[in-house]
Length: 167
Image (cartoon, rainbow, N blue to C red; front, side, top):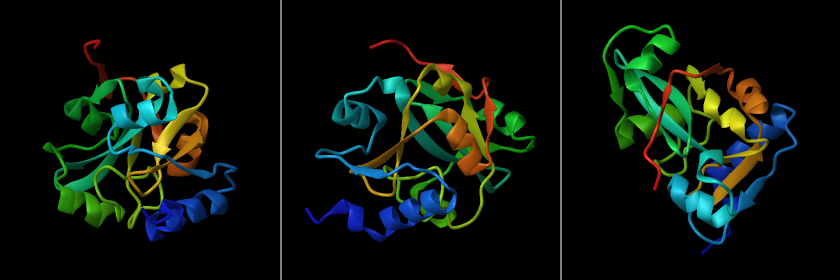
């Protein structure tokens, strides 16, 4: 495998972090971080500390939910949390790439092709450090909920995430 840190999407994420004044560095993992479960296992961190960057559309316009790995997004609450009305749908792979410039499994919470409204799951605040995708299925970066809020211009909302059953 070629060095994932050299991938253009990863370089875009690292540049966006630096431009925003973040000290976060992209970390290349030996195994995939394509899913929250994979990422948690690769890093050796609780599943809830993984940030899932999920793209939805509200009335056809893309929005993003940053949700803890052990939660799922409540689409109806997401629209309300972002002050948007209309049908909320999970974006398909083409819509995700068009809105963010990233493929599913590597969607970073920042450095998107176009700015997106962002809602951040308040339950991520359980963790001092959270890990978000960095543009490649083998790359993440460590951050805090407070920094995610600053980096994305997002708003922390408790109602956007639903607790999943324990495994």
